[in-house]
Length: 157
Image (cartoon, rainbow, N blue to C red; front, side):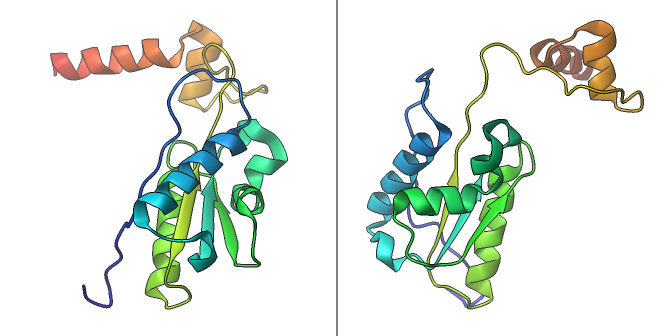
C-alpha cells in the first residue's frame, strides 16, 4: 500500500431493531466488534471520530468524546461529525485525513443513532424557502411518501 492510501481493517454493527437503548450502547457494541474484526486492541487506537445526529442532545453533539469515554478514553484526540445522513461519511473522512497527515496510524470511526417512534417531524419555526419544511407543513408529507413520489417521477422521465 502506498503512503497516500488508507485501509479499513475491521467493521462492526449492532443488530438492527427497536431496542429502546441509548445510542452510546449501539456505538460501543459496533466499535468493539470492529476492533475485534480488525484484531486491534483499543489501546492501539490513536484517534476517534464519532458521528451522530442532533436527536441525542449534548452527548450526540460531542459523539467522538462520548464514544471514546464509554470505551475507556486514553487521552487520544477525538472529533465529532454531524452532517445529517452524511455524518458517518464525514467522520470517516476525518479519520482518513488524520492517518494521511501522519497524526495517527490507527483511527476508530464510530457512528450510532436512535430515532423517535414514527416518522421524523419537521423542526419548528417558519422556513418558507425550505422545500422540506414546506412539504411537511403544507402537505403533511412524510419522508416515505416524498421518496415514493420522487421514485415515481424518475420512472416517468
